Image 1 (cartoon, helix red, strand yellow):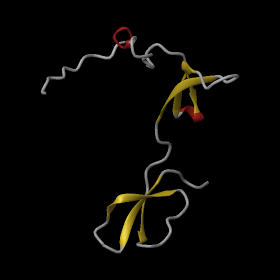
Image 2 (cartoon, one colour; image 1 turned 120 degrees about the horizontal axis):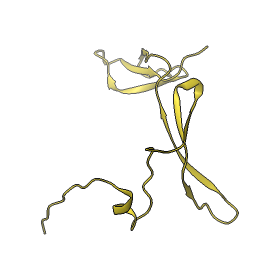
Image 3 (cartoon, helix red, strand yellow; image 1 turned 45 degrees about the vertical axis):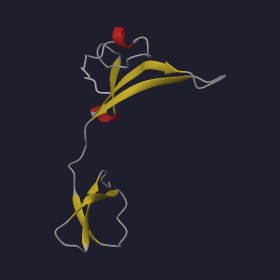
Image 4 (spheres, one colour; image 1 turned 90 degrees about the vertical axis):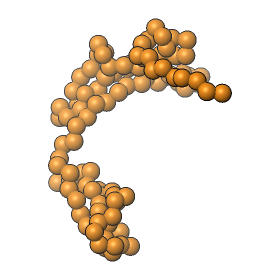
Length: 104
């Protein structure tokens, strides 16, 4: 069986039979984290069960600090705050680690 899938724009009306479209357009928002992040607050709710209450929010953030790269010897622990990159460096005995945070 073969068929053709034709993409269509996602709209709240078209998606209504399946659930709710969560979008940021026109949503209540405010800056957090020193202005580096926008919180789009309570875009939808979820039912976690009896007595529970949950909201769904979207956060749009930008990096605060420039990305830093550190080369570590293979088999050595990566310093705290660094994540090992899947891409190997030119040397087989080292790998790249990219910082996602900086120490104060």
